[in-house]
Length: 182
Image (cartoon, rainbow, N blue to C red; front, side, top):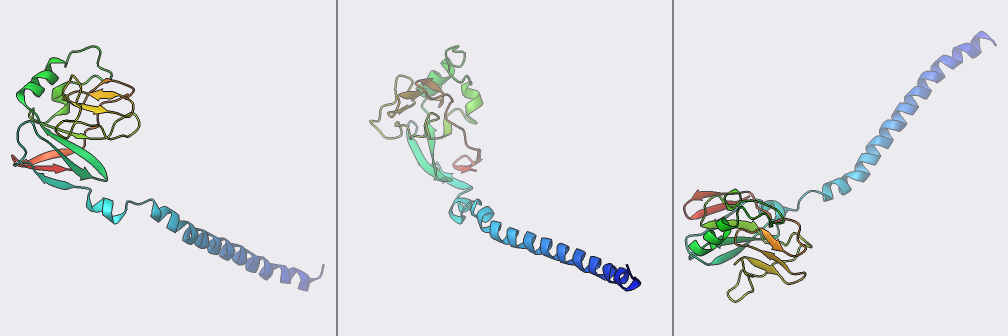
């Protein structure tokens, strides 16, 4: 090998390294640009984000009445429970036959108000019981006609294939007549 051939290898190695790094960096940027729309599509839509918190005026909900509102695309059942419904729920707090044991006090912030997500925990159906005349079962709660799950007046599953109680959304009482869900 001559001296001129050795000198030519030095600059080529540096140029080659630069080309490798530049190619890898360009590939990484191109891959990121191609994947970004997919990642961005997994974010919540503006419609869902706008409904992340809702405020509900409950001043007009009479005792014994039930109200349905929509939160994050799901129905939320608000039940202004009667003394009878409260007593029925509390009486079953120690029932060993509950599928998903929970006391009434664990499921409510105020005894007269029950707030649950109105989606059956079996297959995602909407249980009946919000409208006057709907079947509510012997526990004065909700009935899912699709597969027969029955919930009590505390939203606890009592019978049927549903494995869990109706879910509780995050909520708070802003005032005595204003409920914030979310």
